[in-house]
Amino acid sequence: MKKRMVPFVFIILLTVLIAFIAKFLLSDTNPKIVVVLDGLETEYSKTVKAGIEKGVADFNMDGKVIAPDSYSASKQNAILEDVLKQKPDALIITPIEPSVTIPVLTEYEKRKIPVLMLNKDAQWKDQTLFIGTDHLELGKMAGAILSSLLYPGDQVVFMVDSKTDSAVNDRIKGAKEVLESVDIEVMIEQLESDKTAHMSSEMSNMIQTHPTIKGLFATNDIIALDALKVIEEKGLHIPVIGTDGTMGMLQAVEKETLSITLSQNPFDMGYLSVEKALKASKGEHVEQKIDSGVDIVTTSNAKSRIDFLAKNVLR
Image 1 (cartoon, rainbow, N blue to C red):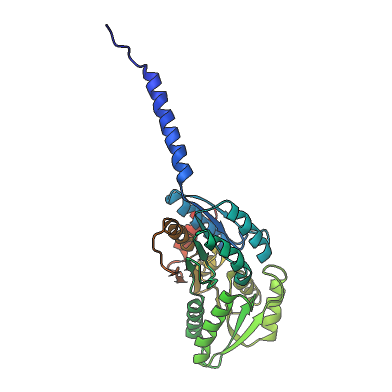
Image 2 (cartoon, rainbow, N blue to C red; image 1 turned 120 degrees about the horizontal axis):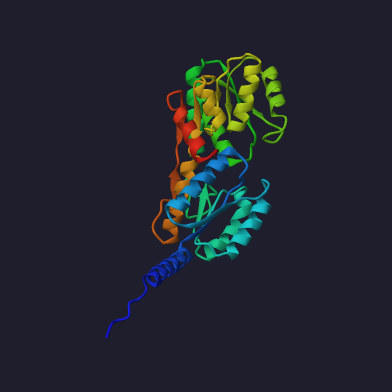
């Protein structure tokens, strides 16, 4: 009596079906993380997001990145309350106003959901960790660079967009400390407008008000680029130090419009936050604080950074 042979096509279909079911079950058990940023409209935040998405893909996680449609702590809290209902395995957040946000984050702690601070340290006793820039050290590096380009008695202006943001205040403190230690005079000008409106006119007014300034430290690259534009238009030669390493500043260094600037590492920051969130979601030990570093950008490394942003962020 001949044995009946299982049709070859049936075997193939059965194999595909088993693989599909296995993939479905696996995806359903992947750790789920949610990242709530303070915004998604700037090049800096887009770079953070790109790093997060690369980490999610590399570590086979279920993740998403969201942010309020305006810089509002109340809107961010509303998002956090909604995310809590989704029961994520970990939360990564850049808090807009930590004091306003912590009461909502307490609910995550009650449910044993790890909360990782990204780019801004809330200094909340129950946070899992902080990963981001040491802003005081960034300020000291900016002060050291400017002091190397100037002389005792010279005047420097700091252009800032906030005096209530802890990161900005740390940058100011660090830079001021270094510059004043070598007898360079520091003046602080706060922009009255938002980060985009009328900034060039404010820069022009500032230069007219301080015609003898020899250097400028901007607490973000948006300000730095506007300042650089006005300085070029007026035919002046004033070094401008930025903080973010955005494409415009990198290109200015590559073209030797600037000799040097500073760059944070937002891509690495985002990627590492996902790696640590995965470990925390499994109950593994993670460091309480991770410094993602600040790099000095000159003509020798500007091109490689430009190529990286072009390939991985600004596609």
